[in-house]
Image (cartoon, rainbow, N blue to C red):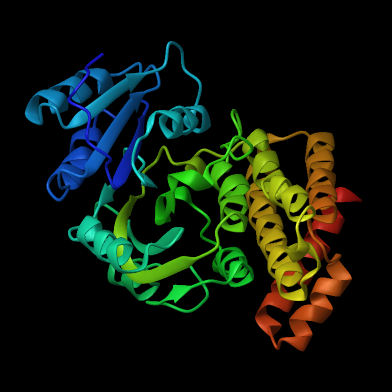
Length: 347
């Protein structure tokens, strides 16, 4: 593989995992290179693509000689392992994960650099834009042009881990590519779980626990591409199980900290578990016609068990918490979800 001239203490490493993205890769990398300065290191890792992605990657290296670091796995290991390999190889002070079918919006790196220079936070959070081939007015009204990822104070340096953890859990957008973090936060015990779907949800809340400061910039810096091969477009029972269990690693880590007893954190985690339960159940409903009755029943029971094992509040306690916070629409959704789940799990 190539060995471009190493950057001297890059302030940022952008990590782009590659697997069968021949149609999207050039646009993704171009969105980075057109705004990256000499202090930005760009790593591309080919996870043994079976299409022409590797060829595109080498063509991009020729277009920007000495600017890209190319890596390759000896065999396909999946997205989590690709990210873990790049974390280990990165040299930048900050890490920014970028999926190879997405792209950076203009001004993203400049905006990040300004925040880093002035505030030097452990984590910077940004918003994103849903990227479709054709966007309808109805989709824009739904907020796809600007999706917020965080519930909390914006445009200021904050030193409040509880606030950060709650804001991520309540925001419901725990993807890695909207969280730029200091490389030093990624200790040996913090990695993406290999072989698991919804790996961001399992990892990013744990990353928040390790941060002492953060800065939320409510600007869309990422264009998140919607296409037919996305995880939610190709669901199966294993993906549903992974979704249902995705917050368990965070719950385990939380139990070792003082934040585990904080009521706001308990509520935020319980709400995130309820949202996962509702989403997983909706996918089960869509697949039910293709599943045997016993398989549907077992999967429904698994979803219920996962909620009980992960949420600090049981279903009744969460319903009461929604009422105390006047979150009546959330309470109604949870009541409907609970009734449907019980009907499937105990027909």
